[in-house]
Image (cartoon, rainbow, N blue to C red; front, side, top):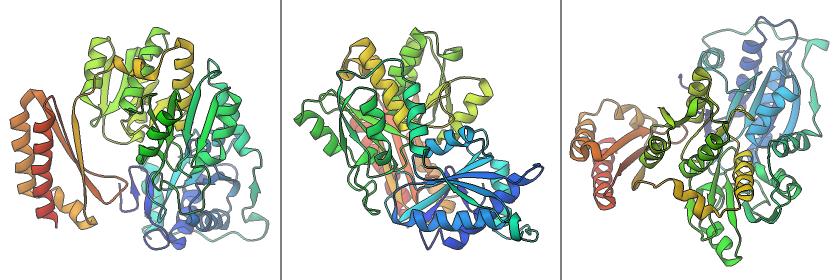
Length: 449
């Protein structure tokens, strides 16, 4: 990747790191790259989340698209997976989502989807980046009727909600649930989906004001959801992030159920129904070792990729498998979607619970998690780069690997979406892994300060 695109598009603090000028240039570049070889002017679906800066950046991006002759279907506030779905539904050439996902309100981002609903391949991202960074010139701008136009899609939310509902095998009648919308994109869709499927849904954090997205709520802050489920004696709570492409849960006892556990529950069901292609589940290097043990015990092949749902999907496409995901709650059901979809994941899981008439606390016992400690360290962009060549950090990591042997593992990696280096240590002894994680974190903090 170059200097703009990370593992999940372009991201930064809105109006400084990610400016209107950059958004406009990305629009121009994306339209130029995706129009090459085409026989007609390209059509883009553009959506956004609920951040204050989303209107500003989407307007700039749309202006850039139109300025080079692309037409735009503006779907306004929708989940990221809605944009991926609507690209195909509306027969568009590409889609763009303005969102910084789980990040706080001052951040924003730009994610681009190709015409088949998949995240833009690295090669095309690099071509877009070359134009934005001035390595390649744009041609003359069109004038008159050749300038792009904007159409507002008033049925976008309904079209997406209808799609999610159509994927559900069994109604949610009788389930009492809490749904945490993170004051983000799910605020526009959750009530339509869960009420229509028959659940008694308590919709929480669905009053976005532009600044409260992900603030003490959603999949990154689940304490209040857990308390709400227990206090109201509900069956389950589901939580989304700001753009609703991930889902995490709490069971009826208020205990957290992460993406790895959701994957284990759903993989078991898919295999039982003969729907787990090649008996394979795709995860990442951060997938809990307990999930790998679950796969071994249940005759499921596990494949690990780099962190990022785009890499999970790439592996699924290469091997023609249909199920994969991340501990963070990005779960991909490729029979129904081309990207992680929090509300699709939630409805699949809840439908499974209803069909089997089992509590989530019982279903999650199919997998026993290994103790895992993760420490996130804030670093500068320069610190991220220095990490790769620092010998003292390498020595500290190797020391931990030696001490753990075959009983555990350590993964240290720069985040692809935030100014962080993540230290994850996993093993059978919780006290040991916490101690080792802190030791490595201390070295990184000292070296990259």
